[in-house]
Structures are given as C-alpha cells and as structure tokens.
Amino acid sequence: MSTTPPPFGARLLAATTDRGPLCVGLDPHAHLLADWGLPDTAEGVRTFSLRVIDAVAGRCAAVKPQSAFYERHGAAGVAVLEEVLAGCRERGLLTVLDVKRGDIGSTMDGYAQAYLGEGSPLAADSVTLSPYLGYGSLRPAIDLAVSTGRGVWVLGMTSNPEGAEVQLAGTPSVAARIVEQVALDNAGVLPCGSVGLVMGATLPRPPAELGLDLVGAGAPLLTPGVGAQGADEHDVARTFAGVTDRLLVPVSRGVLAAGPDVAALRQAATRWADRLRSALAPDGPGPIARRN
Image (cartoon, rainbow, N blue to C red; front, side, top):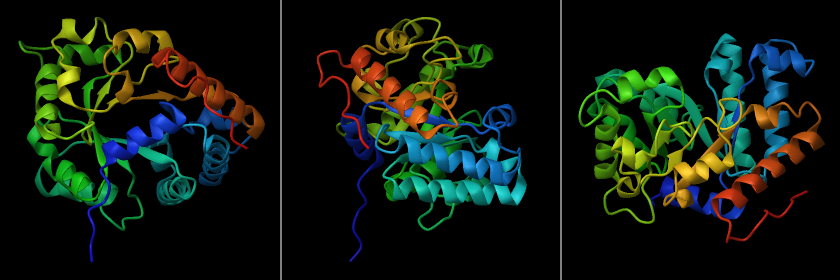
C-alpha cells in the first residue's frame, strides 16, 4: 500500500527545531579546494564534500550543494553530486540542491524528474527554482515536489544587488507578485507549506516596506547573504521578525574556511548554529547540544 510522504515543510521545521536554522553551503570552488590542499578535480571535490558532510552531520538542519561546482567537472562531477546527495540522506541531513532551474513545458518537467522524481539519482529534498519565465512555468516542479514529499525554493528577492532591477520592477513589484503566488500554493497548509521563498538577508528595506507579505505567504524562507555578503545573524533576526520560525540560513565560507581539519569544521558549524539560534530564538532552548 502506498503512503503519502511527509511534506517537506513539516520535515524542515522538525529539523530546524531540533538542530537550529543553519544550512551549510557546499561550494567546492577551485580556490577553496586549493586552500584545502586538494586538486581541482572530481576526486578533489569528492574528498572535500564528504569531509564536510561528515563534519556537519547533526550540527545543522540542511546542506546546500551548489550544482555548478560539480557540473564543471563533467560526468565525474555529477557522479560526485549523486554520491553527496545519497550521503546526506544517510546522515540525516536535508538537502537544498542549488540549481536555480526555470524553463517551460516538457523541459521543466524533465528538470523536475531529474531533481525531484522518486528514484532519480539526483533527487534532493528540495531545489531552488527561478520563476522568471513566469511562475506558472514552475508548475511541473512544484506539483512533483509536493507529491513526493519534497520542496522547492522560488527566487523572490535574492541577495545579489543586481537582482533588484528586475525583482523590484513594477507596482506591485515582480517579487511581490511571486510572493502572492507562493501564498496560493501554500494556502491552508500548516504550520507552513513546502513551496519556499529565497529571500536575501541583505534586503534594502524590511519586507513589509517592499510590499512583501512573508507572514501571509506561509512559506519557509531560505535567506542567503550571511557572512561574506555582509549580513549577520542579527540582520536576519531584524529583517525577518515575525517569521523567524520558518528560516533556513545558509552559511558557506564561514564554515568551510575552517577546513580541512574535521574538528575545526565541526566547531565552526556548531558556533554558527549557536549564533543563529540565539539571535533568532532568544527565549528558546539556547545553544544546541554538541554531538559527537
């Protein structure tokens, strides 16, 4: 007998409640591999990636592999990405596969099957999607994600400064219309839906001043921009006041720079998890328990 899989939104909230909102970005770019003394090859990426997920398992809610840094090594790199996704499942880590796919018709359906289809070697718990061919073009991915207990993160307001010229265009803005459509997909789903939004921690003004109803969207929020892009945990707390229970906060260089030593990576992940939990839930349970 088939059973309905648990929805991604519920699984995400369970993970962030248990381990805090830290999402470790997995970005094996060339200069970071060099800093770790690893070759800029698929095998170097494999060593890097498996060391990171071993170190951060139990210390964060999720890991966010950036697909581009695997794809640039061709078939061997994609095979490493498959291994990383499987390794995260084995270690109890949710995955946010950062692919930012967005296309139309059968092509979008193909992307959906690749990253969200049951049994696909590249299937992740969730993927990032770009809505700039029209929000409706994402329907194959959204529907498949919901049916398989997976999630999507739709780009709303990104953390790069160039994004504002498109995302804040119009009245209401493009971003506001995307938020409204995400709200329709999440309507009636409690405590939150599985259609998330990417909302940069470096927003130029508070979301309400930008016409973005994040409370009403019922969406989990992926909030890039912490660390090298200038935001910190206190910026996240101020910007997303009222929805801090739905946040997943990516930190990449702030953790990865501690490598290649596994103990140092563990300490960096634990430190960031504690910082985020303290800032976002000051009356909550306090620092997360250390795990061996």
